[in-house]
Length: 217
Image 1 (cartoon, rainbow, N blue to C red):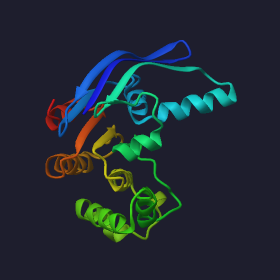
Image 2 (image 1 turned 90 degrees about the vertical axis):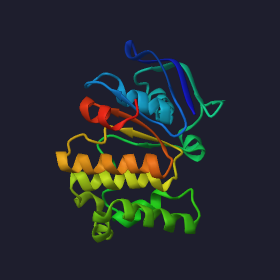
Image 3 (image 1 turned 45 degrees about the vertical axis):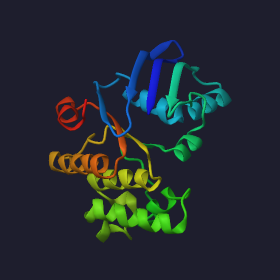
Image 4 (image 1 turned 120 degrees about the horizontal axis):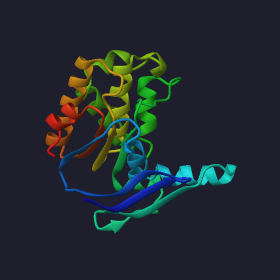
């Protein structure tokens, strides 16, 4: 499904990723572990295409130069220069670290916004699926997302990613800053998404023990 070869990312003269190659097969749950500043989020931004937006913004304001080398091939097509919006349409969806959501919008509104590429019935089905996976969100659906706890925001962030119906779900440190019981529940759900929904999952984590227990490899 995903074949990454010799990926190198520079921020000015600082190297964030150094000649990184890997493959993810259809239906797999693959994890990458590493400490802070190891390049995990840079990797996810590059796979999702957000690095392209970052390059454009930095160039406009005359900021730091971001340079990417190597290739990203998804389902047989080179997507290294493909925009993030097009990657979402092709099924690559990122749930970012620190669960960024729209704080002034309700839980239900957040889910509807995330399904903007889908038909009405698909949005309805996606919301139902999210509430099945995370029943705690049902009672909170009219609450502003900014008032949710960290764990609730992470549940919402993953649900938002699922609204786009990913074939490849990218998870950037879903355990970050959460209580152990919440983390355990979230990882149980992610395993269920992978095994029962046949969604390929690529995870980056600081928590090596958790990642090793959960991922196939």
